[in-house]
Length: 190
Image (tube, rainbow, N blue to C red; front, side, top):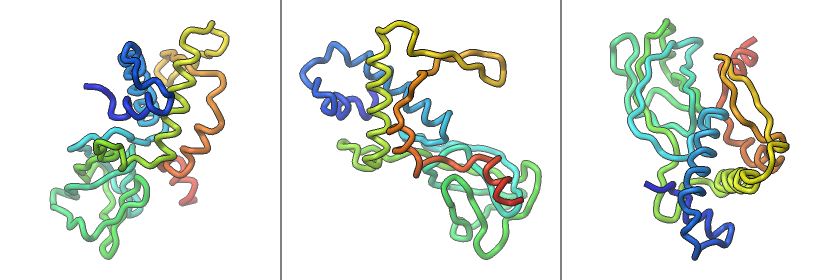
């Protein structure tokens, strides 16, 4: 299955009639949207029915990704009324009744990402542009020497490639969509 943004990206780059690059572009688009999901907590492509068991702390549950649509919530083995919660970014909070604190006491089922119609109208324009900018940069640098690539280590000792110069526009377009990270929330609570 091709990436939901493939055809629109090809229009953006004015390569509509050329299908020889579809597999290559498709692969990079999936890599970029996966990078947004794992690196920034922004789910572009919709995934349905994710299920996690999490801890409730200070009347909140912090999920990894946004946007989210909560479909079920169980706390302390009791079904929670979804009208009694609200989400702010990727943080779920209780409205009238505080969510009871506990370690791994909440099970939540939710959908992430944007519902993509045939025109990709549900993905915000600036988020689509961020995907296209990074995709174009990666495709342009794919054939160049290793000078534009740096290596970074992840926490488990692996290494991954990283562009030395990710365009500033990419970060600027992502700013309104970044998921709250746990450390950010901890700093806000102090």
